[in-house]
Amino acid sequence: GAGVSQSPSNKVTEKGKDVELRCDPISGHTALYWYRQSLGQGLEFLIYFQGNSAPDKSGLPSDRFSAERTGGSVSTLTIQRTQQEDSAVYLCASSLRQLDTDTQYFGPGTRLTVL
Amino acid sequence: RKEVEQDPGPFNVPEGATVAFNCTYSNSASQSFFWYRQDCRKEPKLLMSVYSSGNEDGRFTAQLNRASQYISLLIRDSKLSDSATYLCVVIRGNTGKLIFGQGTTLQVKP
View 1 (tube, rainbow over the protein chains, first blue to last red):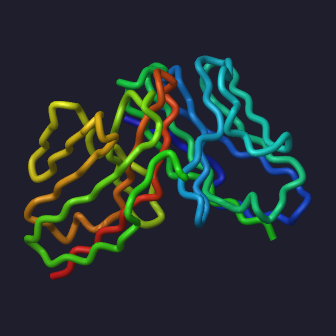
View 2 (cartoon, one colour):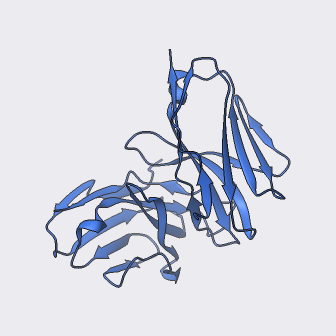
């Protein structure tokens, strides 16, 4: 079946511009997670959704970052006024429920480059 | 100090070798443990969960020592296709939030 999909696969933007990244989770998965992978930082948690609610936003690096999820499905991660340090691969994952025992399946990521 | 620490390697081994990776975690509230595999420029994929009793999946064996807060992965009879980065991952409490180590790079050579 279809896995987690993300778009765009690559995004190059200029410093100061806003960008929107999209994640389509596996159908029926109620939990959705955003992570970021950058050189020297490894993979870091950003935010997760259970349904449309985001109980844990602790990983968002600044108030320029926001995310929403509608209809318990698609999620968008928005970065306002992008900075060069925002350059990274943004990975989305989904799981059936928000339980430790449920495997998280990752999408292919969006590679963001801020010039 | 990072919450999950791994030796980044790289580990360069010949085909057929046995190789072991270690990982330590600092938060005793960590509850669930995993090894993920990530190929170059690809997304991470779950390799196996790690249980206190130890578990094996073919050539792969994972061990957890809660007292020492230590996790290991053993790969026997290495194949060229095992070349990848292996990520040690923990979940703190029942949050579902994965906390990743920096990863250990394995290169298996003919």
